[in-house]
Image 1 (cartoon, helix red, strand yellow):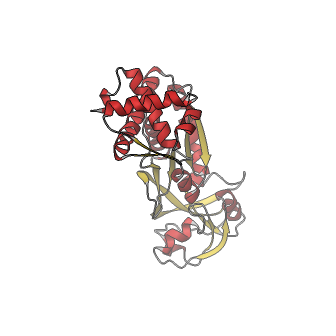
Image 2 (cartoon, rainbow, N blue to C red; image 1 turned 120 degrees about the vertical axis):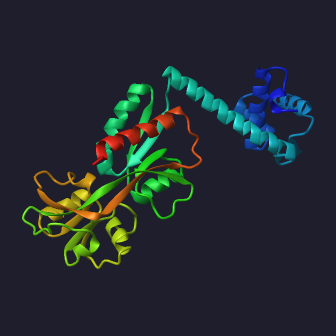
Image 3 (tube, rainbow, N blue to C red; image 1 turned 90 degrees about the horizontal axis):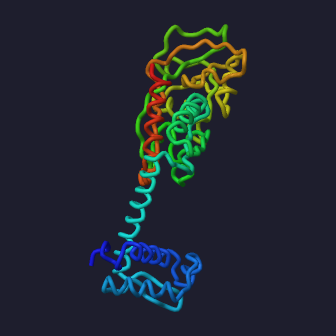
Length: 307
C-alpha cells in the first residue's frame, strides 16, 4: 500500500511516521519514547498499527534494540523525503509571508567581506526582517572546511584543485596588481610572473594553509621569484611594501587594507587574475532563503567588483 494511504487520517499518518523515524534513528523503543516524551506502550501501538496498514514488519526486535527490516529501509527512505518536503513547504510559506527566522551563514576573505557583508545584510534584512546572518571572515582551506562540515552555508572564495562535495559558481576574475612604495621603480606594464623576476616580493598566506597564493599560481608558470617575506595578511604586506622593503602582488580588493597614510604605486598584471566563486555544499537543502541569499550575493558582487 502506498505511504500516502497509511492510517485513517493525515494526523494519524504524520504521527506514525514521526514515531517510526525516531525509533529508527535512536535504535530502540525505550530511547525513542524518552525523546518523544510518550509512553512506550503507546509508541508500540502506533508502530503496530503502521505495520498492519503496510502489511509488513518494519522493525526486527532484539535484546540490544531494534533494526530495520528491508521494508523498513524502504519506508525510512520515503519518510525522510517527506520530512524534507514538509520542512521546505513550511519554509516557503513562511518566506512568502515574510515570517522567516533562524540563521544562515556566509563567509569570505576579510577584504572582500569588508565590501560585501554590509550590502548583503541590508538587502536580506529588508526582505526577511527576522533572519539572522552569521558573517565569517576566512580564507582558503578554512572556508572550504567550514563548507564541508556545514558550519558555513555559503562562501565567496577561490576554487581549490580538489573540493569533493562542493559546488562552485564562477562570479568574476579579480584583477591582480604589482604594488610598490610611493618612490619605488615600477615597470610601465607587466604581463605576468616572468616580469617580476629579480624583484624582492612579500607574499600572503591567504589562499591555502601551507603556501601563499602567489607561490601556488606562479609555480604553474615555473617563474623564478624572489620571495623575500611571507606574512599572514594583506595589511602586513602593504606595510612592508610601503616601507620600501619589497614589492607585493595583491588582488584589487586588498589594495586599501594597509595602514593609514601608506601610498602605493601599482601596475596591473594583465595575464594574472584571481578567480572568485560562490561555493556551497552540493547536497545542501535549498530553500527560498538560501536561494535568495545566493541571488543577493551574486548581484552585489557584480555591482561591487565589475570593471
